[in-house]
Length: 117
Image (cartoon, rainbow, N blue to C red; front, side, top):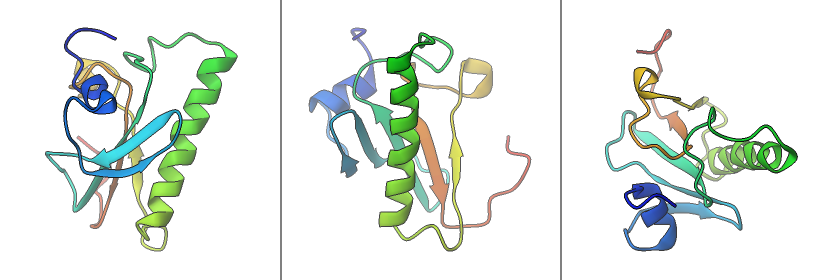
């Protein structure tokens, strides 16, 4: 874990969050600066800087699958499946990744424009 990773601090309990879901390998919580009426972040509990920084191995493949399954579970629990939701993974500063810890944004609760950004 890098010394200044806010998501690692949230996972460890050093910083609080409004938790939505947690399992052995992921944590989902409401974003403190939401961009939609529903804005949940899904993070792996182990530090991975970005999707590009993750090794291309079976452990990473399982982690990526777990993140998407967690997002689906959260969307179901929050009753978002009927009207829809968007999943976003920003990678790198030009793409808008503000925290260097892999995370999935789950956005919903209003019509979302396309293309984004």
